[in-house]
Amino acid sequence: MSKSFYITTPIYYVNASPHIGHAYTTIVADVLARYHRMIGDKTFFVTGTDEHGDKIAEAAQKAGITPKEYTDKISAQFRELCPELFISNDYFIRTTDANHIQTVRYILQKVYDSGDIYFGSYGGYYCFGCERFLTEKEIVDNKCPEHGREPKYIEEKNYFFKMSKYQEWLIDHIKKNHDFIRPERYKNEALAFLRDPLEDLCISRPKTRLEWGITLPFDENYVTYVWFDALINYVTALDYPDGKNFKKFWPVAEHLIAKDILKPHGIYWPTMLKAAGIEPYQHLNVHGYWNSGQSKMSKSLGNIVRPLDLKDKYGLDAFRYFLLRDMVFGLDSNFSEEAFVGRLNSDLANDLGNLVSRTIAMAIKYCDGKVPEISKKEKSPALYEAALKTVAEVDSSFKDMSLHKALISIWEFINITNKYIVENEPWTLVKDPANKGKLMAIMYNLLLALRSIAILISPFMPQTAEKILRQIGATDETKNLNLAGIKKHDSLKVGSPLTRGDSLFPRIVQEKETQTKEKKSSMIDLKPEIDYEEFAKVDLRVAKILTAEAVPKSNKLLKLKVDIGEERTIVAGIGKDYSPEELIGRQILVVANLKPVKLMGVESYGMLLATDTDKGLTVLKFDREAKTGGKVR
Ligand SMILES: [Zn+2]
Image (cartoon, rainbow, N blue to C red):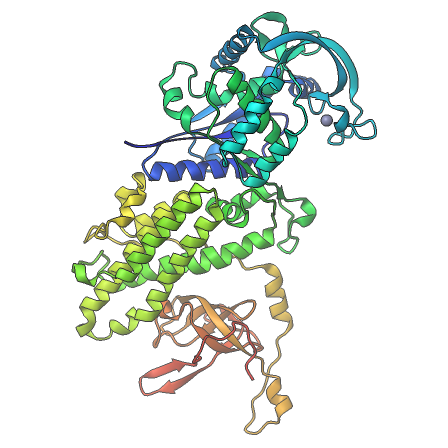
């Protein structure tokens, strides 16, 4: 029997346009939804907008339009963000939708009939920013600390939900279900809040003060408090009470929120559910904040940009990867363009991008452009075991919401695959026809590893996964991703055509590097005899080759991107002796302070060291792994 999975984002309050926090929550929900679909779970994923309340009415008034016109406009911005971020939601809910209004009124009536809603008088300090009465404890120097304005004393008759009645039940429930609220720090925060007596929740606003809301079913003079309305969206989306989806998905409901709305989701919502006779949700997953103040954004790349603009500048999958890789779920994280570009260059361009491009290039060259046929015994048990181990690690990381750990495991597998290339040297094997069988096996195993990698990264980077699968001829799989497919050892169709694609993640060269490069050039004229000071003027460095490609129209020049502690382009005349793919990842020796020269139209910032042999040039290398960028004496 297949399992079910229900994931929600908060419905976003339409008093402001989408920002990185919204993007992050929605992307995390999307990754979870895609993963669960891939393991065969029936999955339902909901996002949407929260549209009632004081703040909306106020913002609409300022804009000179009706609240409905205002919410239509902002809600559309959130809706449009979904395809822009490649979000696979099944449903987009608005709290102004007719079915939602009906559900809210149904639940209110049910709770009212059971005696948990009463009419009472209340006087208190009301903050229009928070849209609620503040407790004495919350008021600091006569002000709401969050909004910096003085709350207004209001005394009025209102409807109250007997939240206090469920305090002991809730404490007990949180304690018994250790991951009801997770990570643990937020469970502890909720329990800390519950140490003080829980007050009843004012769930109405008189229409004399606010009309933009859902009218109470039992009193036409009042509208529903915005949180009591909004939280109910999670069951509206499943056609509560009688819908098939409600029966199938509610028992496995998982909410995803940022830490600022822990209280309504961790305290109000479970008690509301209990009072309405609905089982509590299964998990509340709480994440931290992205600190992305403009002052923290990099200025080295010229313009200061908003984080959301970076997806346009560097590509959506790189953006999704960065958000998921750099935030430990539950903790705060800093967003900087430099860190983003760093991840893009190292993890995506170097590790993943190079692996795919060199494997495809070699397979096209050596295997006639098709997936080769090999015998069972030639399949690499080591790579296969590593793939299975990765699947298991990724699965356990998803179970405890450690998405960054899932990516770390996948990258370990990517690096194992890169090592497999270096250890087996297909470019050497191809020189002797006797090695044909072994070479085909190695290429098959590499293509199979690319397929496993594509499937594993697909929840995080769906478009990249699809590109990889197309390149290895597994086009059918792009529409039918299945994690269990990795366990099928012989799942590549022999004879499928391989195609070379554009570079998945072109490297980003930061401008400041180019500038420093130009400044520190000095020509050394080598003489037969020199003293040490003169020798010391030559800046020799350990360089790691990041990318290699032929210079167009030249039969011996290769353009190399090397890392010598910073990135350089070097043009080298070794194209007759080395293929680009055998150079990637190798450490070589370069003269780093040679004056730049232009070779066949390409600027070269340094020279690699090589020597002649009977069979052509050989590039100088090291006996042991050296420190990239290290000085050579
Ligand atoms: Zn406030």
